[in-house]
Structures are given as structure tokens and as C-alpha cells.
Image (cartoon, rainbow, N blue to C red; front, side, top):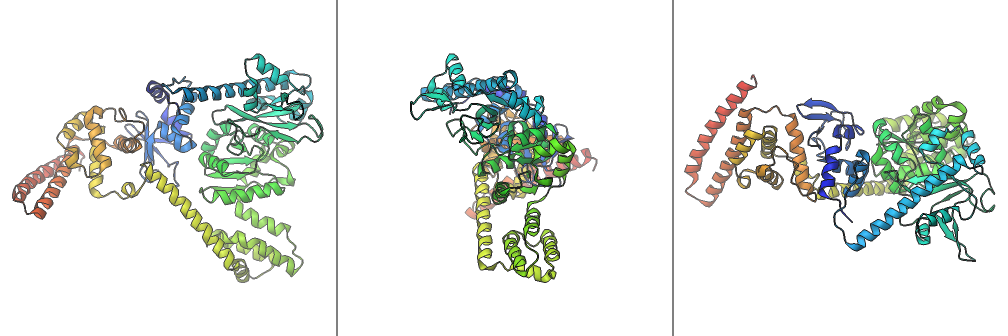
Length: 617
């Protein structure tokens, strides 16, 4: 994959307002001379342990050890690679990226992809003009506006209309210099079975552009106005772009490029089924809504939801497909620590209908009253079952056992057991026994599911460790490592005395771990004032430890005596290690080393007294 020039990366890094960027994920407050903190966006916590340095644009969490710079922050929160993170930030800042040298094959593939994206964007703009300017689209305009959708909202999503003629896009694109093969590869034309002639794939339909996180059009969802409005009565109501080199069904969420910042701020994402549902919710002020793009919920889409926010509000239709989507969501969400709640829509209406009939406040109230998915499933069984006979109640208990098998002992389980007992007119103790009596098979299934979840979790921790971001060495720091880390943070906080203190030490002798030893060598090489400069972008370990040190330095109020205290502690630790080694070897150096240790300890005690005096202690 082609890379961009270092100058491009530097210009993007310099242009990003890091406080503003991170604030889309968590609320920040200033806590030091050059430091902000907030609740960590990478793990659940109640006390802030996540800090950033807005000038050097790095972050570190003292709770989960997540760390990195402006680019890794976007990679981790958006689920993209470095190249995509750079492109997202460049778009955000309005910076044109310059590419580095690339081989001919890669350059050809990139140019081909860029042309297809340009062709799709051009076609989307054409469809949008047709919707608002052509007489043929009057019925489409009437349908959309009749659903209560405003022109402003429809334009925000780029909604359009494809003319019913067989070759409008084909001919216009040819005139624009695009080949028939490019039109075919972009999914805009198809070939006749009889004549093998190409013709427009989308005709006489309302067009909903399907975009990536950067807002680039990848394909289309196309809706016929009424049965028979498209080329023949056998045409489906919805017709989507088929999978191709640009568009992959099930990887994206409709409207995610418009919703993700709002979802991050709200801490929740609303998931709908229909395109108009998403547009209606955005128009109603719920701009954290996304849609399924007309597909069954996939693991990739759940991953996208997890990156947007930790809470997902399911505003799906009450029909069988909607119920299946909720069940699928519960199975996939268990692996990603997603909390799922269900938005109950009155009268079987979809979100767009509710907004149209009862207004924005009605749908906001429904969203505010969303219930946990497990409670919704229990309520649905109790509402739909036969309460008039013992057989009917047994059937409901049978349907509820798999639901309760997913619930650990908890207040929620107790409350739902009480609900079932009351509705089925059973003693609470008996209801608990019957609901738990799911048999060995259900228990085995639950255990297997738990093992799978554990394996998945273990896999993600292993991956994080492989990236140098987590592991036992990070979370179980020894006292010696804490001293080494504090010393380096103080050096960064006070560059001039820090340079002298570092020069007095030998990283190979005074630092016991590879991570901090490498950091010390990097800082000694003239990088104390700008610690993040001169790091190879393919070196996440060094980037991570320096980000951690920079954030810690921002919390320090440095005093020269405290820097001496930390330096002398490192020297004492080095002497202790040398004395221990000399004793094991039977060397005669023990006495000289012990004398030197005594001298350093006296220096340490004097420095410690100065530090106490300077701090007012």
C-alpha cells in the first residue's frame, strides 16, 4: 500500500486540534501546566485516569495503559489502519496529502480506485440533481416530502433519483471519459443476457448513497416508488449495489460518516433498519442514528457500532426480521462489551412514521425509555404467549430459559424472575427453579459461549500485547520501574536540568527494562524538548512509552531537587545490583562498591531534604 510523505504526516499532525479531537470521545478538563484528563474512552471507569498532552498530541491511560499519538488515537477509536487514520485527519483539517514514491502496480491500483470513487461521487451528484430538478422525479419528491422529510435533511444525505431511461448514466459517464469497464466495476451498469449490451442498473428509483466514514460514495441503495414502478413488476422494492472492489455489503452502516461524532458525544448509537428512518431521526435532532443498509446485521457492522459508542439503542421494526436482527445483535455484542437497549415504538410504527405522525419529541421520549434487550425479550415472550392454559405457560417458560441462561446472578435476574412469576401466577421460588432448569444442554451451551467469549477476549489482549500497548509488564510495574519512569517524566518536564541528569547516567546500566532504556536513549539523543520527534512510525513500542512519559510529565510540577532524588535513586539501585553481582562472583569489588553506595545515599538524603523544603513539607 502506498505511503504518504513525511511532510504530509507532519502537516496533518500540526493542524489537528488534539483537545477538540479527543473531546469527541470523552469530556476533558485541564489538570496541569500542559495536561488534560478525562474518563478513558478505551475502558469503563468512574475516576478519570486518561490524560493527553495537547501540544505534543499524545495520550496515555494510567488505568488500562492505552497510549499513542494523534494517529493511533484515530486508529483505535475508528478501527482503521494508519493510512486511513491519516486520510481521515487530512479530510478533517482540509490538507491535501502528497504520496511518496510507489511501485507501478500499486500506483495503477490506486488510480483505478480513485477513478471509481470519482465516478460514484459524480453519479451521486447527478442523481441528486435529478431528484430536485427533473419533472420525472415529481413522484419521488412527493413521496419523500410526504413522509415528513425536509429538503435540507434529504440533501444532507445526498438522496437522489435515477431516471427511468436505460442509458442516462452510461452515456453521461462515457462523455466524462469513463470506460464501460469502469462503469461495470463501480456497479452502475449491468449487461443484458440476450444482447450483452450494457444498460443502467438503477432506473426509476429513489437513490440513497452508501458512504464510508470519510463520506465517499461506495454504492447505492435504490428504492422503487411503488410495486411496478421500476422496469417490471418483478423488480425488488429495494435494489442495492452488488459487492465489488469498492463496495462490500455488510461492512458499513448507513449514515455513519454523519453520525459518528454525535454518537461519541452522546455515548450511544441508535440503530435503525430503513434509510428514511435514519434521515427522519437526524431531522428530529437524534443525529447519532445509523442504518443497516438493507442487510442482516453482520459482525463487521457490530464492530463499527462498538467503535462509535459502547451503548447501542435498537430502533428496529417489530416484525420478524427486526426481531431476528435484535437476537443477532445480542449474540455479536456479547463479544464486544456492547450494551444493547431496545427502543419500543408505539403501534408498530417505524421511526420515520413516529416522527411524521407524532413529532420529534415522541421519538425522543421513546429513545429515552429504551429498555435492556434482555428485559425486552422477556416482555415479548410474556406478551405473546398463551396465559390461559398450563401448556401455554410451559411453552413460555421454555422460550424464556435460553434468555435466562445468559443472565448471571444479578439484580436484573431477580427482577425479571419476579416479573415472570407474577405474570405466570407462580411462586417466585418455583419460577426461579423452572427458569434455571434448562438442562445440561443449555448449561453446556452457556459454558461453551463463555469459553468462546474468553477466547475472544484473550485474543484481543494478545493482539494488544503484540502491538506493545498492553501486557503484564505495563500493568504490574515494579517499584524500580516506577522510579525509572518518574525520572524520565521529570527530565521531559524540565528539559535543561533533565539533559544534565540524563547525561550523568548510562541507560544500559541504570534502566532495567528494554522499553524505558530505549526511551532514555532516545531522549538523550537531543529529543527532550520534542520527545515525539525522530521516532520511526513503524515503532509502536517506543511511540507508546514516550506518549506515556509525556502525559505524565504534563502532570508534574518539576523541582530540581526532586529530579536529583530520582536520579540518585537510580544510581543507588545500580550500585545494589553491582554489589549483588560481585558477591555472587566472589569479587573483591564489594567493599569499594559499598563505600560508593554510602556516599550516594548521603547525597540522596540531602537531595530529599531539599525537595521537602521546596515543596513546603
